[in-house]
Image (cartoon, rainbow, N blue to C red; front, side, top):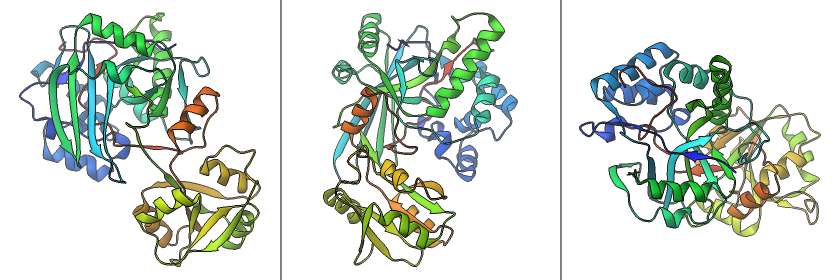
Length: 396
């Protein structure tokens, strides 16, 4: 089972405005977003976390902030409660509550920390180069604990560290320094697996970095054995999961229709595709195909054809198109998907339904993986609440 440890967290000093210091995770920011954040504030975390390839400068900035007191270290090992209060897309109020700490970096297939979907190829050098230069974890991995009891243990507040509202989401962080409470949290998390929800590539980079540190030091007991992770309980009433839709190219419209027609009945779709269509898809058990001319159609699964396939829309589409050469890319958001299809750059787009909590749990228990981009967890964690050094930094 996974080891989860406290550490002396680096945090922004009390006189730094968190609203201007924190930022969304690097992988949801465009270059323009990051530059705007940097131009708006001298101490925004993107100066370190999004250095545009200048990793030495990022490290120098981090060290200067530590030396100047912009960032200060906890005097003892701590964990941090992180709460996000928001209203999800269907209008349901939710609060996600989890804990920030150091999650053990385990070898692939070793168990304890599990991937939940296959990953698509992605350059890892940026995060690896940044970690090498700064010896610090910035944006946390997001993990889901299959153990029960974490939410209840985190109900009592810790020492307030700050609260900010971004895009309608209230983010609140509290520090836990009581050793007895820390041990109770660690015991809960050690009782069952942690499933990686978001940050598969970050975790893989942490594994590479750990191996490099082991090779350089000959030790398996450095801070590189762990990586900054937010963990919350895998329960229905907390998590908000949205779909990541599919965009297809590299085949003709006729070839796509022909392949899909073996598995789905293609029915006409009357009217415009709207956010209400996503709810209809859920209630009717259908998918929607979008064409560049603005028309759409229902994809109704034929009786029995997917009986031997797990009930995942992404897997159904992989199965249906397995024998047809094509390329697929991914897009979150209905408006964004409609815009991409309307651009004419794709043969078609297909709207899929969100993956259920029950299916996520079942897949984890059976040791299986979902197709790439099966889940989009919202809202996103902010970067900058807590930084986790993997070595002593200059100025500490």
